[in-house]
Length: 112
Length: 111
Image (cartoon, rainbow over all chains, first blue to last red; front, side, top):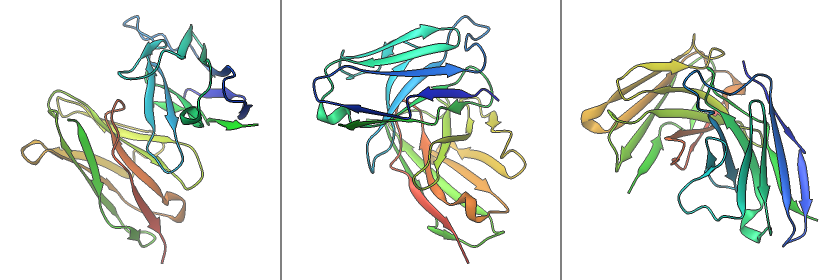
């Protein structure tokens, strides 16, 4: 199974700061069709996960442009510029290139 | 608008079978895949499996021997059945399109 390693486990931030989360895959996430099915989700306390980014760098409808996904192959990053209070929670990367689909263990974005 | 809602028993006895229903609206099951994801309390997310628009299914290999996903398109419902439940199957179970998620339902496995 593909293992997604997220770092850091926790990211303390001050509101207005930039935050960066890394997601490294145990194998390339480039599908045979040429697409890379790497997604990012945010789960706020007591809520269901919400899709932020799909196919590495595409923002889902309504997601602010301060969320930027990047990367290729097996190395991916989510950057959040100017962190706002509603950005706090646990971020998960997720791959749907290889069966079984897998999630990273999560990165908690929290206030310093 | 797109909605998904899970329903089922909150408590299941060890060794018994879990049956959950996901009732959807706002989209067609024959054109979209619906997946089940679970989350043990305080832990991360695990993809369990999904059913595709053509009715084919895909399962997490770790659960494949115990898991079945099916649907009734006339009722806009997707079903999850998992047998031989143990205490470590205690989790919130979500049905999802990935772009849209249900609220989740907590299933506790306990005698």
